[in-house]
Image 1 (spheres, one colour):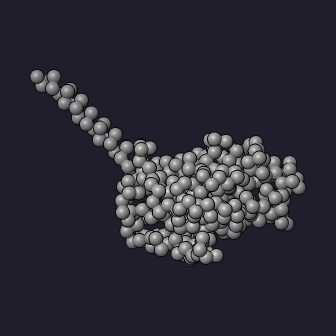
Image 2 (tube, rainbow, N blue to C red):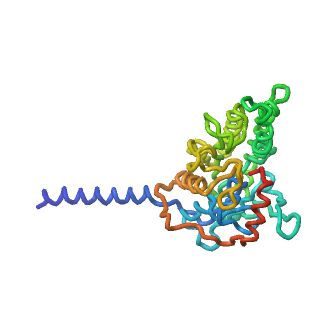
Length: 331
């Protein structure tokens, strides 16, 4: 009888061990208080549902989808998203001026105000607005295309005495990002800090001037600037002991030229989808998946569990935001 039961018992033990390993492999990471900091590539301007904060913040941005996956979105006090369009690293510690439907301008508090001593997860998507890098690319490059459609007039415009001034500014952005990480750690010493990169705007080859109206030669230059920006984010994370989540690499084939597969919009603002040169909901959901996996999650939360339209803007507010969005050029 023992000769029969021993293999059976071993098989049961092995099965139980495999079950525990499978459970551990698929267990969701656990956090109690998650704070999202960032600019409009975090906030998600004009992605439904827009909140009424006039930070152009969506309830379908990657922080909301990540909070949903982590089981925090519907838990009172467990998730705080203070990302705000046009924010730069200075707005972590200084207030930010934003538009308002009632007065010419309103003020948002410093994003670090949301951090608590018990905050244990912080995602940060910031840096593209430092020294107006993103606004320079999307605001200036289209205006220079007609001067040399097959050349690189935008790169030439910002190259002074042989120095690419846009790329040179990113060196300082890295230092600013390191200071942001240090600041988060000072406010929330136990927090897991995740630096989120920027998804690609243009493809590595080819052009789509009807969607992204850059001169042919400027596509490669804009892409190189974005790669340098992401390198600044990743280097700051590495030097300060934070986690970096690459969204640039995984967004290959999902740039603004990718049609229905695009994670980021081109030059056209769609009041029901995204502001020009900003992420669509599909891109936000993809980024949430990338961050979730970086945190140790290995399964995809059911699509039946979604963020809600809490704090949603009224129809009139959304219409006013859409009118203003035509003037936005910064993430």
